[in-house]
Length: 603
Figure 1 (cartoon, rainbow, N blue to C red):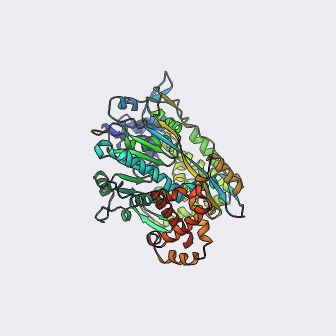
Figure 2 (cartoon, rainbow, N blue to C red; figure 1 turned 90 degrees about the vertical axis):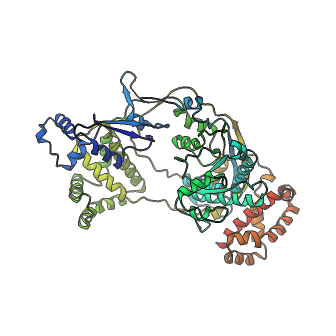
Figure 3 (cartoon, one colour; figure 1 turned 135 degrees about the vertical axis):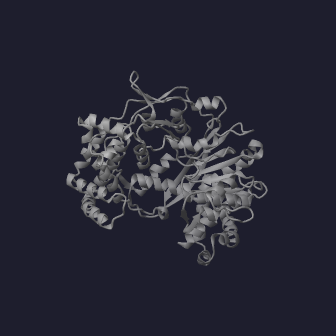
């Protein structure tokens, strides 16, 4: 590409620009003659001495910045690496600066986007778990705490309670915005919980046909997910009112834009890159932070005729955490200082201290890969395997802690080299060989997955309630933000502290504490316990095995449910009184109870 200049436009520049495709693009557009001249000067050799047939040299020539390539990068959420890669360095301030800024604040002030933080409500989970078994196993504390919280979040009572809040808010407020065209997004923490929310919204609609006659719900997630041993796919769940399936992503977007649907349940999918101006309300049941929080909430910020505001209910994140996520992108964002290029050598030296591989193995690997080229040669693959297998065997002899550290350092070395060589050329063939080698090795290293311990049969949800903790506007400060380059040199340590199940439950209960009354006691657990002692439990166990969940919930269980709650009401009026004064609540509890029982009986 001698004597030609190129402008490369990069959208969403906060995403990685250091991968193979970005390197291939830069390599294809270089002015080779100029690059060879620069390389010769740095190596202090004649141009004729540069071996351009050497693939390693050709790769190194493509590194760094090239005078014939101009990058125009756009992002609303610049990270430290995107500012360093595409920004301009100001030697007077020692900062990397954007070439031009049209800030979030300015866009809001000038009416190009809406302020999604203006009407924000946070609702806190408060619950108490109890251990229901004599067993008190020792567990890895961090992992067990996450599983306990996950147990609460996917519990039928929790999903039903939050769905009630969501639907009442949207029915009474959200659906009437934008001239009755407004739509809502429910953000679930996992694909399985997205399915649970979708089904619970459907149940709510069935129990409230009059209030929900103008509401239609869709779900968006990738692949297949199992919930209660039943496999679900997005394309099987989404249907028009006529019963016809919605078969593609494009059709799903079009269907949601229509008047037939106005609630979309998502899990990862559509949290970014989804443009629907009619989105007005968002209900969040997922931990969000940093760029991910800004990207997700910004699905609401599109302007539309008659759209004057947005509304968010957040069941997981505190309003100060959301402010912290948005603040860096409200005004100008700068990077203070630069990445230390020597980090790549620090990482390599730390890797070599593990003594899992040596220069000879790296050289032999690279020779085979260069000779093989793009061809898939079985003999070459065999030779590569003979080099790497002994390394992997040595890796497996390390302690789990050391394996974790080595794998983390390997990734950091690889990412750092890839990032740095987008900005400067590193004329070090041996270092580039190691980059090639580690790129391949990373993919082959087995990951030690910690043993999964099923704690669901050892715990129970005793109390639960939702408490509103904040409602109002999250105000951002009108000031620029200085980011720092990454200085993460040391390998991450794998958390390994252990504690007993009972002790971990107590720690979780402390985090999600609340002042509970008898009326906050989870009714489902009381009904479940009484049912399991009932003399007809064997008959219902057979019903559960012989029928699908819908048949069990709608036809077989209601009479038995009424019989049990009448008996419980006589013993605890305060907790069970609401069941007999609120028909909708009665149906919600019965459906949630039936689904929990169906799962239990089929085990």
